[in-house]
Amino acid sequence: MSSLLGIAKKILFWSYGRTSWQYDVLSVLILAFIFLTPAVWFATGEPKGLAGHQSSVLTTRKQFVSPENLPANPGTEDFERHLRQALGRSELRVRGWQALRDGGGAVAAYEVDIE
Image (cartoon, rainbow, N blue to C red; front, side, top):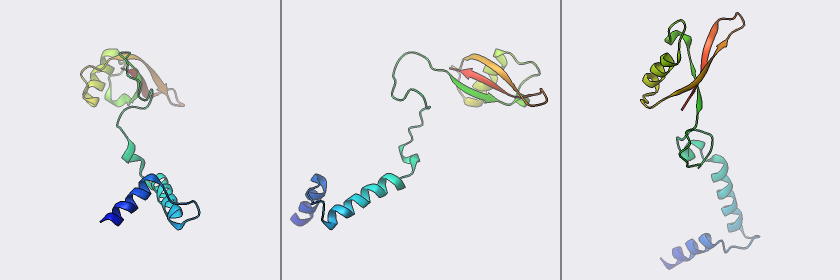
């Protein structure tokens, strides 16, 4: 039992010499962890942007909406109603929007700024 404790202590405090095989094995294990760990393990589910920034300032983000889900000439209320239902967020507010058109001039999608 004390030998396992001694080995764990040596690994934890990295007390192997640079020319030893144990040092090489530990280095390979660390590199394998860095390069082979799936990024999903470290995902927090928070939106990208100001990472770690905690303030009362609301941030806006872009949402793309298909024109098939909206009336012919949608207004801000139409976007809010649709996005509240689609995203399940009752407190959602639309800050602005613009139509994205294809080569023929038809509306391909709407880019909506929400908070």
